[in-house]
Structures are given as C-alpha cells and as structure tokens.
Image (cartoon, rainbow, N blue to C red; front, side, top):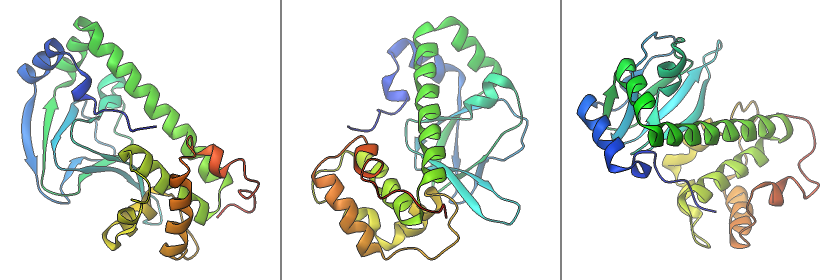
Length: 224
C-alpha cells in the first residue's frame, strides 16, 4: 500500500485554477506559527513548499504531534467548514511557503465545484480513519509497539522498498517519530531493536499494519 497523493495533485485543472485565482501566498520561517491553537480565523491553507506539523501542547507542556503536513496538503479546513476556534497549531518545520484561502472563498468553491467538494470529503474521510487508528494504537499498544507502528506508517506512506527503513531512524528523526507516537512516559527502546523489528515487517510487506502487530498475540499489556 502506498501513501495517498497530495490533495492539490488530485485536483482537476478547473478546481486548481479557481483556487489559485483567489488564494494568497506567503512564506514562513523555520518554527514560525502558521495557525495558532484557539485562533478564530476561518482561512484554509495549502502547503506549497517545505514541511509543517500539526501540534497541540498539553497542560503539563508536552507537545503532541497529530500529523506532518507535506507539499500539496490542505490544512485548516475544519475551521473553514464549522467556524469553530482552531483545535491545534500548525508550525513550519523549515522554510515554508503556503497559500491562504479566505473562508468565504473556500465556501464559494465548495459550493460551485462539486469535484473539489468530493476531494475534500475523501480527504476528511482519510483523516478520520487515521485518527481512529491512532486512538486504537494509543489505547492498546505499549511504547515500543507504538514506535514500531509509527515507523511502519511512515514507511507505508513513503512506499519504501525492502530494507530501506534505516533512514527513518536517522538521529534527526528520533524526536519527530517519538512525538508522533504519542504520549511516552518511560524510556524509549533502543533504535536498533525497533529498526530490526520494523525492517522485518516491511520485508514481508505485512500491510495493513494490524496483520503484523495486532494479530500476533504480543500487543497486550499495560498501556504506557
């Protein structure tokens, strides 16, 4: 299974032209906020270059990463739909360029471009399914298994071939993987152990993920 194509790349020419005619582009510095948690804006964003992360900080100061935003992705669409205050922050992970579409323009395009509206529904469906998977993972898997599953999600999204999991555990990615694996109260397992387990799963291409870790009888135990 491969990752889904970026949202913008799936749009037809007419829909893309309608967006580009009404959005405004802006550049963001590394670590600059694009969307702030609690903000009441209804604008919708499209990442054009760089990378960003959707995060929320808990009451005790822990950062929880919901997902990474890649070029071509849409974000902030929930506020554009329901007008409720932003449920999370989005921060640039590097020098980033994004397009900003006003809430009014977003609603107009949804109402007048049915293919765009359908693509938006598919996007929201995929996000809901992914969130359901994460709730299950956090509720049933201990830390080591959550880290392995997070690596497998990343390998699946990137459509990695056999044996190419090592790059996912480069030192620069350790914190990113840990944040996306959810709350962690005990020490992290050694990266070599996780890499060996994840490599074995990828070699046999045991996707979807539950075939590897949810059916092997080893995922029980106390949640951590």
